[in-house]
Amino acid sequence: MRKALIDAAQSLNCSQSDLAFVQEIVCRSKTSFASGMRVLPPVRRYGMYTLYSFCRIVDDIADDGGDTPTRLKLLQQWREKIASIYTGQTTDEVERVLLATIRKFDLRQEDFIAVIDGMQMDAEQTIVAPDEATLDRYCDCVASAVGRLAVRIFGDSSAQADQVAYHLGRALQLTNILRDLKEDAKRGRLYLPKELLARFHLPADSSACIQNPALHDVCQILAMRAEDHFRLARQFIKRCNAKAMRPAKVMAVTYSFLLRKQIKVGWHPPLKRVSLNTGEKLIIGFIGLVI
Image 1 (cartoon, rainbow, N blue to C red):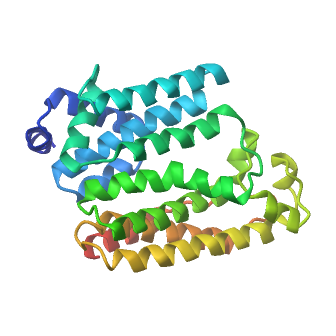
Image 2: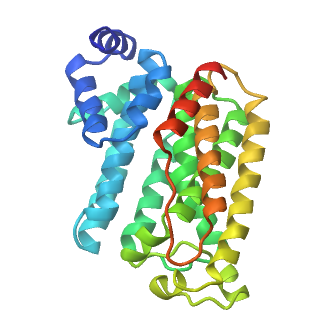
């Protein structure tokens, strides 16, 4: 672990203490993300830790940053910080490592801004039954934009890699929406598109919607869309640098498995959120070693 930190610091041309700071953000989150990134060489691994730290910070602002004006103010500050970072100005550990990562992997400023745009969508109002266009924009901002940054850190900046990010990001986000309906409803949120709700005569109300038997039919349609995006992502992965796309393959395998498991359980009240058991994690981990 120490050698990886030293190697990454040398390659990124930044301090070990700054890298350790962003690694601690990942560790404190208690996410499986850190273990999943261990397949990467140190410099790319710490690049992903940095990207995760940025996403974690702005996501926490959107969810728990205070009242709406405060959250919007903090997100605007991050827009200004990103602009400053791209001119070489930094003020703290995260910003310094972000600058190093941006320079190392030629990350695009507009992708960071798109992530903030997605967080602002959650911060400025409680999303309830967005129209199809708004839902797609939300998926692009909170997932595909992150993917566009990630594939460059993985080692592929081609147009085909951007297409992997486009489709895999939407597939992952739709899968999360379908798994988190009950948890989102507790926050008053409902990410199912209003056009589908209207087609099946479902109320555009989070609590009432998740108790309606017709919810299953709406979710089946959204699940098929996610499956289509997984299929297209796999097609574009084949056109990319195979070594660079290994983490994307692992994510695709993991989340497509979760989606199939959720489809099997269904969306009948009371809703059940699926997750991976120990055996399934071991199988997917093995797949990650051989693909």
